Image 1 (cartoon, rainbow, N blue to C red):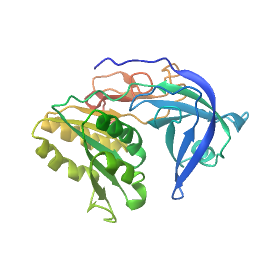
Image 2 (image 1 turned 180 degrees about the horizontal axis):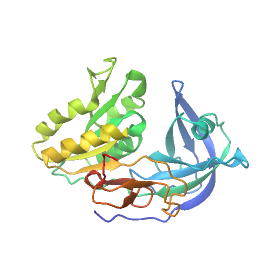
Image 3 (image 1 turned 135 degrees about the horizontal axis):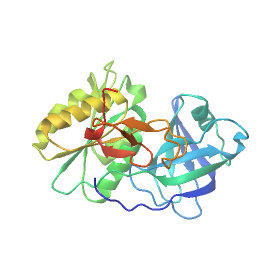
Length: 264
């Protein structure tokens, strides 16, 4: 696994300066830093509202859309913690620990990056697409969901990549799972692909299997329950195929998909 520039995480209190709602369930939250957050594509934050009081809810791990003086996260409402984030108002203060985790590995100029996203898994991949574009590399992006409503930020991803869509109900792109698009993309890359994926576990398992069959590297962004962000609480343990565990917050979030036991 490649080494990366591990910048120390900082715990800061920052205001929410913008909340953009995308439908009923998705929201982009933007915070304002005094000095830029130096984060890399694939890294994440631990965020908690300072007005949550003695609530038992732990800080929420959230992938970054980008860093800088106004870093943003994408929130999908799935429980009480994300509901509180989604209901935040401009000016509310948040405690943010960042940057955390291992970013995506670099893609060399002679490889063809293929980004496979499912639902809110688009977040770290959009950050990656923007980074690649700055390097003069335009990736292929495959984005899928149950319906068109799940394809949040697809226009932003389209601006940074050669985008292909798939929905299970056929409401956008081809009808079917996004993994159905992968075989063709791998064939077009002719053995030069490097695959990056984030989304539902079953989707990522299929993507890893396809990449393995094509004999090309594949990294996944592990989205799992976390409590500390440092690997101390061990709550983010993911089984390895050779025994033992990978800790998503300290060894991930971005990691070689071949080391994961996808059957557990």
